Length: 427
Image 1 (tube, rainbow, N blue to C red):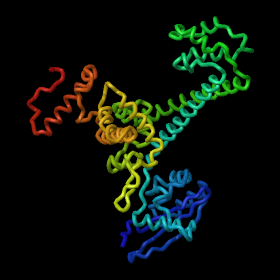
Image 2 (tube, helix red, strand yellow; image 1 turned 90 degrees about the horizontal axis):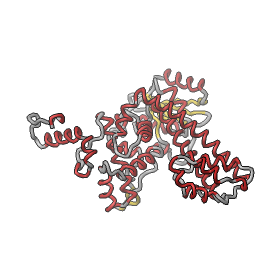
Image 3 (cartoon, rainbow, N blue to C red; image 1 turned 60 degrees about the vertical axis):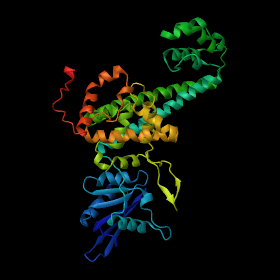
């Protein structure tokens, strides 16, 4: 018989316009009685739901994470109640005679036996930071789409600036595009004007630039499209800048230390570290082990085995925002020659498992490092690093780290290091 962990608890079936809540009260004989009520999702009704819970001495609430509809309820209850938000796939009722009332009672039954795995919900300040950075990711993707749209428009108009200039959205290319769009007809094109619009190193490529433009054929419809895309792109970039200012303000209050810690891991940039902090938070007690965190981020192989046969070991679809950033950072880390720690590990795994599995393994290693760093407050300083692979200039900047690792290694071997003179200033 399953043990009843919560004698009084509530299960909530969440919908867009209303919720169905059932309070289960279990007596000393193990008999559970249920009270079920419907509430609309207006703030007034959610507060009525809150008062109903308090009047029944129920402070444990479980609900399924249906879209974004659970968030208004969670916002009102989180300060005074133990609210568990569970993934619908873990609390799905058996198909058949299914009703909203039966669903809420089913959630209550699972919850009172502590059978509802809790989803990770970070604190309110972290959620605010997360919302901004997720929006920023979408804006950056939109900006990339607009850039590709402009590039395609130039290509079909016989303008091949991208084959000459490394950045067609740089100052020189923008000046040239402004000039071309301002022409009444292609015959007004003047090579000497183009030369005056070039900046810095682009001046040495003036002949090639003119060749890539000369003879262009740009229809009026394409001109309208390019102008519209450029206005939209500028608007997106301004929005990203304003979001960056607000993100910096939020991070400076309590997250800056952890952002700086994450940046010490090779391959992780400033923006990437901000996204990682916003996704996993700074309190690692929410995840009992680093394996739990990696599993939540979708970086662990699935365990799908039956009759002694493994059907699939692909990583899960979890971590739709965190996993791409970590894979991006892993790709940057394996290319680093100054700090080849992850590169060496990647090459060993790649020989056996191939590139894709190796890069996921590196992303998982990086997340495990961040988990431990956030727990201890220490910077990235792996004990198994091979200093012979690191350039001399980098070694000099990591002198104290190397000495610290040496002390730890000697101490593990049982050697008394107190008698050694390990002060870097005297060496």
